[in-house]
Every structure is written in C-alpha cells, then in structure tokens.
Length: 351
Ligand SMILES: Cc1cc2ncn([C@H]3O[C@H](COP(=O)(O)O)[C@@H](O)[C@H]3O)c2cc1C
Ligand SMILES: O=C(O)c1cccnc1
Image 1 (cartoon, rainbow, N blue to C red):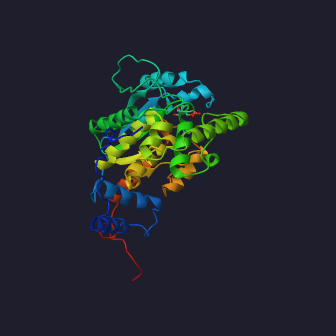
Image 2: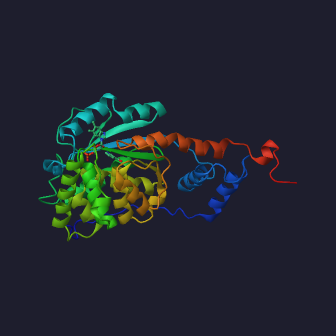
C-alpha cells in the first residue's frame, strides 16, 4: 500500500532535554513560600510547561481547540449505539455553539474551530468551520483498508498545515465521529500489541450484547489486516480521517513547541500513532484525564502518562482537556506570581 512515493517528511522534534533550564525552573519552584513539593503534581506540570515553552517564565498564549470530525465505514457493522448521522448533526451543533465543548470553551475563553476531516455530508461555509474533507467517511475496514496511502497522508498533511496556520502555543485536539472508539481500539490493540478485550469499551453506551458484537467484529478486522506492520499503514488500514488529521496536527504542534493538552481515548490514540512515528512526542503532552472508556487506561500506561483528572468522562470532543485547562493556568500562576521565601521574608528552614 505504502510505496517509496508515499514518504511522510516528519517535522523535527525539538529536544526538551535542557539541564540548565530544568535546574532554573526547579529552583524557582522550590523557592516559593511553601514546603518543598507541597503543590504535588502541579509542580511537575509547571516544570514540564517551562521545558516545552523553553523559558523559566512560561505563559500560555492564544490557546486553540480544533475539533476534528469524520465518519467511519465500520459503522455499517453496527459497532456504535448511535447512528452515523449524529456526526453531521453534532458538527452543526458545534457550529451553533450548543455542544459540551462549546460551553466549556466559552467558560475559559478558548478559541474553537471545527474541522471537517471527512464527514459524510456537505456543510455550508461557516467562519468556525475548516473544510478539509478528504472523503465522505472511511471505507469499512472489515472489507478493505479504511483509507489508502494517499488519503491517509492527505489527512496527516492537512492536520500539519492547519496547525501551521493557527496562532498560539497550546493546542487541544478534540474529535467527533460515530464509530471512532472502534478505530481507536483497533489502533491501540495493533500498535500497543495488546489483546483486544483490553482495548474496547461501550463507547457511546453499547449494552452487553452490543459490546460482544463490537468485540467480534473488531477481532475479525484485526485478523483480516494481520499482515499490516508499519505505523502509517496501520493508521490507514484501521484508523479514521479525524484520527489521521489529529496525528498530523500533533506532530506539527510539538515541532513548534506547542503544549499538547490531550483529551480522552480517541485523541490519545492519535498521539500513540504520532509516538510511533516520532518517538518522544509524548513529552510535549499533558494528559488531562483518564476516560471511562477502558482502553484509555491501558493507552495511558503504554505512554507512561499520569492524567490530571479522573472524572468518569467518556465524551471526547476535547471536553476533558478543556476541563483540565485551569490546572495549567494555576501551575503557571504559582510559578510566575507566587512570592519566594526571600521576597516575602518567610523562614525557609529551621534556624
Ligand atoms: C450525541 C453525541 C455527542 C458526542 N460527542 C462526542 N461523542 C463521542 O462518541 C463517539 C464515539 O463513540 P462510538 O464509537 O460508540 O460511536 C464519537 O463521536 C465521540 O466523539 C459523541 C457521541 C454522541 C452520540
Ligand atoms: O475518551 C474518549 O475520548 C471517548 C470515550 C467514549 C466516546 N467518545 C470518546
């Protein structure tokens, strides 16, 4: 499928390893008027954000949310509790400002744009809609590869291009695509070499019979494509257009030293693909939450990630990332604005 013609030029990943800056940041953190380490995970977060933004006084600028929407041919097999048409309907809901992600984005003053990566519907132009449709949904991966090499690369390149055009130093990738928990599960099982039953879940709310059916279908898909080996080919064969576009967006954003504020299972499946293409990209990621979709915990383990929140969320769209956003703001507020022992005349240790 992928031949010499299908080369993906990856943007370079900057090195986060910087002992001088790391020491500077750690000193600033330790000199604040608090017992050492008492702000817990917030301290590690402040350090990470400083290293990503490459400064001892990091600040978030013009944070951006991009919600990538696409349809999945595998929905023909009845692997979701909701009909495929909901993808299109939710895109209209995003554009009207009525979805969960809109509400949380407004709460925090974050800019949100919706990306049509491959919805099986046409949309009228809208100022918040980026029309990047590669095709009207993927093919049914039970029958054939979801995307061919050209389609998959087009999606990845589109994701890169739209980050290059976006301002700011923090990116949330959210998604909407009925059936995409299946695509994410397939990617996790294949790339993570995990048994499928650790990778699947109820998605939008399958009952026990629905879950058993989903497992049986996904087993067949994995068996059919068992010979597929390299990460791009795995993405094309089993993934989705929104996942491929998110992968490109993450690769580009990390190469520009943007903070990747990660959402749930689907968004992290794109990061898993990106990590296979560009090892080390996960260090640019802040993991907002552990989704109730069981595969997400295994995925987080694979990435050695400790999520900030555990709220039983299982929505996607970028919602978990935006809910964790104030924690990043607080990490930077303490780092930049808190008094040091010297500033405040507080005793640093026992006399
Ligand atoms: C109304 C509605 C809004 C959503 N927003 C995100 N998702 C989430 O659920 C879908 C994945 O679950 P599955 O694989 O089971 O179809 C994705 O669209 C995901 O973004 C939604 C799902 C629904 C029904
Ligand atoms: O964790 C997620 O991102 C998720 C879980 C279920 C359905 N949609 C998304």
